[in-house]
Image (cartoon, rainbow, N blue to C red):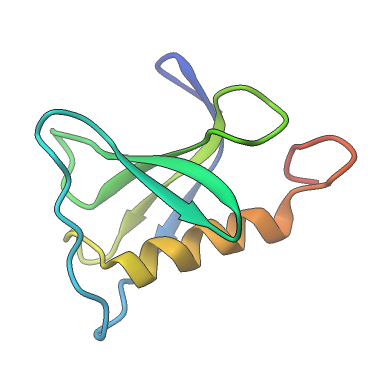
Length: 100
């Protein structure tokens, strides 16, 4: 799916866990995260609380990633972000670098 200038593979719904601490995004820009040896850039939509855009910085396809929304629309914790990223990575076909 094309969202702005980034190619997002999927838009998923995500229910944040109760144990995760909230992740505060910088007003100056996106946050970088390392998950399972891969680097990601995570940003929140200013006009849609609980909506996240995740770009896979070290993946084989430039600017590839995904988006998701939390329900209820609140900030999710770091553990929840890591879980969403791991779910994304588990769906990627290593031969194409895209969700298979």
